[in-house]
Image (cartoon, rainbow, N blue to C red):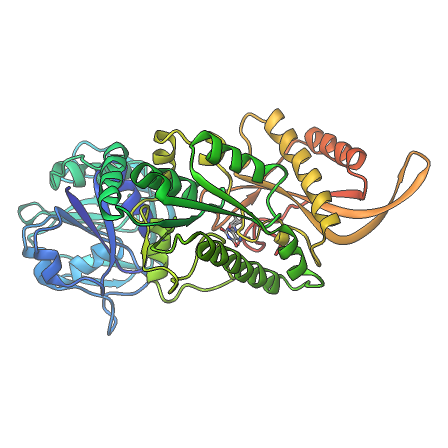
Length: 509
Ligand code: XMP
């Protein structure tokens, strides 16, 4: 299979670069600039190299760099932003502070032919984000694009197949971006388009059928798309030797546990066990109000239940996990900050109980996982399921989690979802209800009520790193409010959350 190396210098869009390459059905992998040696690069494994953006300045001492020899090795190289500046710097050009000519956001780009930009619009919008700029280049390079304040916005040395772009082709705001990546990968590197999900399924099933022959494999199935796809894929490989444990902590949405069980036990005939641990989780959560504490308790109780199930069943040879590529790339970054401890139920720590861990999806991005899921026949409501926090509704109930509060929230959340799904063509990217600790006075008929205030939350987002609160129609909000107050006794106020992220987070805890 042909491969593109995405050499990571720490930019914020680096995963997007790999995704854009893969959209051309060419496999791309991300490696930190300090994770890969020149020897590995020159070994012939890669048909092309993309150098990413990054936060540093190439002229600083100890700035991230690479061997200049890579520019002469015959493998095509495309530098993006910092990557382009690094090419200039290593080739004997100069990079300087852009000062007031730094560019951030949408910018008009003018192109002047060249191998990489050949055939693209002469004037278009691109996405810029740089405070340094290339000032001079050695004469072997031809400048192929400029903007109002950046005279060298793209350049190339056609004979050595070295290219640089100051703008970000991976960002959708760059109108010619997809074409630039397509040209580099297919025309310049000449990659074959041999990365596709049908082949992925076939080779993965074949590989694990052989590797796991006769061994007992255990998987924690959460109801989310990653573990669901892992389960169905491995089931094809090893059949009943895969046992899927669904830890029912009682913190899923209304009827969700039943749907998961029905889909996988009956629909796919998986070796499926539902471990009913609802009362155990509620006991552990009694009187606990601190959000981090709740997450930790749920995380460790989950592992305890899962391990007990492993020991009981004897399926302890291999642990299967639904780790996907962004998890692998992120865990390689040591500077990842923890804003909340994202205790991903289903993401179990490496454990001595098992001899081995397998992660069949560790090379796939989320959209690729979804495509595999669709091809495997997994229903859309699981394949396109909204993200759902591992600790479930426990982090959508402020304060102590009790059975009564869980029931109120499940009912209200169901009404909210039903109304959005029934009345909007395009539903928001994520929507749910949150039960606060605050109570408010109300009247129902002639009687005074004193119930909980419930928050409705709906957000529009591409990547959940930033999110806008969704402008839902007032009529719809009004109807939802009336329905919840009338149908769910114990809730007396409805409020709509109009906080974006940042400064808020999507979840309340
Ligand atoms: P925040 O609240 O951090 O959420 O803005 C961003 C996205 O992550 C989801 N989320 C989680 N997902 N385990 C998960 O798998 C968790 O513990 C968790 N906490 C939040 C959240 O629903 C949103 O989509």
